[in-house]
Image 1 (cartoon, rainbow, N blue to C red):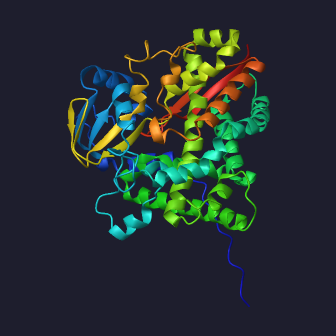
Image 2 (cartoon, rainbow, N blue to C red):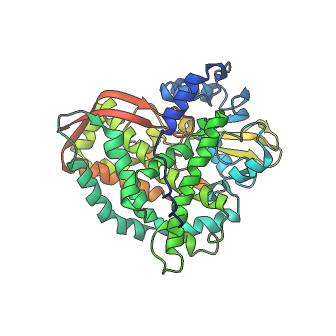
Image 3 (cartoon, rainbow, N blue to C red):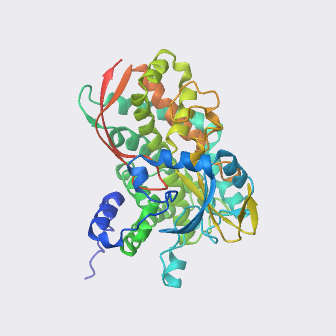
Length: 441
């Protein structure tokens, strides 16, 4: 008599960060020296929050400069606001395509088997050039229109209120876990029509997908792809369940009913899931933590905001500038060119450091201060610029605004009172843990 197959098991541990830390401890011989002071690919400067002076020096002396022999190979640093706008405005010359290297500083592991590499390439629309990019972006864009944002406002506000009302007063807890992850994970579950009881799989997959550092170790690269395969398996079940059913306003249904996306390969399906999960999770999650840290770091600005809640929308823009939840995006030159006086060759890797542009003194006076009344806060580049500007920017802004509004309505003041652990990564920029205590203002 045949037995029923065992149910598919989805891993929930270890976290990407703990796996990387363990690998680094177990392989000290593989530690890479960084003799070049402007090699800002090294992840420890973001973990230790020491990146600011490095970029400030770069902006002052050579905002476009070339690094050779880094862990990620040779690349160009693009550190000024003006230069990044120039690169973003020329998408044909500075390609985002996965075929040329994609959107992060990392490259495939050296000596990888070509067949394995082909299997692990994950095309996604942010890592495509026109016209491919256009059709796929248009598919998901309806989920983020003003009317959809308005529709989501009530549900988002209710959930935010519930989370805030559950927080303990006067007792220390981890804001990242209890608030930032919970709120962004809930919104992702709503956007995907994802089963609520499994929603914590989403940040687990997001961290494994978005941690560029994992590519330094072949074993972790293998584990990463296996975990992303589990993600594709889960979403494949959701896809199959919605086939043949009328369209619904969730992202799976939108892709299923789109001629531009309903015949995706498995790799392309995985790639776009990674994009939507990382984009919907890390940007908002890390800014939700970063704005609390900034308000605690600058209590004078917290007082200004508490006294005038009409400043909240502008404070959201300033938080996005100040935190910069994604530190960089990569492009690849498709032809020989010149970038503000520097000769760039076809095939060169060009890395735009949004984290530096958002502190550019030429654009943002006193850039290292969090200023809720900053007049030009909206000029930040945290969502990118041009054809690849974040499709979910309005939703991210809404989530941040609602959080601050609901906190103000409850007169909540949050103090950082315990351990703070930042992400050890050169792509995702934010917090793993931030212990806080809440009081009434």
